Image (cartoon, rainbow, N blue to C red):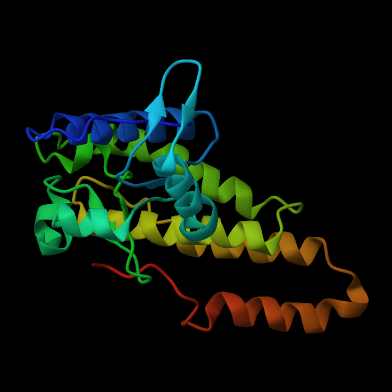
Amino acid sequence: LVLSFEDDIDGHGKEGLYRALMQLTGLLANNGFLLRGGIVKGKIYHTEELVFGPALKQAYKHESEIADTPRVILEKNLAQEWNVHQLTSREIMHGECPWICSPDGYYFFNFLPPFMGNTFFTDNDLWNNQLNPYRKMILEKAKDKHCSEKIFEKYEWLADYFDFICSKYSQVNGLQVSQEMKKNRIQTVLKSMNIKNIGKKLFIELNSRFRGNDGGFIAP
């Protein structure tokens, strides 16, 4: 997917970007897909038939080489231009800024809070219905014996981010998923093990899941 918006003074392009990302992430999640991408500022030629330019190349590099997990990241220069680092956690959690800083210093689109975290929507069931597709996706992947550890690490990141959001909003009712995900994953791994190697593999698996310093999600 390639999206482009005008870099206008009034901020309509930025607002259009926010709305497009929110709609895309929700639509794709409901159909079993996660979104990863890079957002940059630069020159691009974009029509219905053709798209090219340095901005496309930069965005692709951010998506393919840096983002890694299911997140849409901001180019660091653009994040500085938008002053997203000056906004507080409280402002982020109230939907005034849809960006969260990752431990690697890149800001990513804060896509999980329904309705951009607008506190006007306070109904628990409404929030849970919006978040449950992500929770279901995480738990199903934990039970997938064909899912490699490299891919599963991306869902672990999503689970940590999911629980972080659950801890910040009173509208979310007991949806935390990380512990249940880890339990399901260990059970899945055990079922697929060769009995001769079960001791060694179980030790490695338990050590990686519960050592407490596995690079989990860090709050801004």
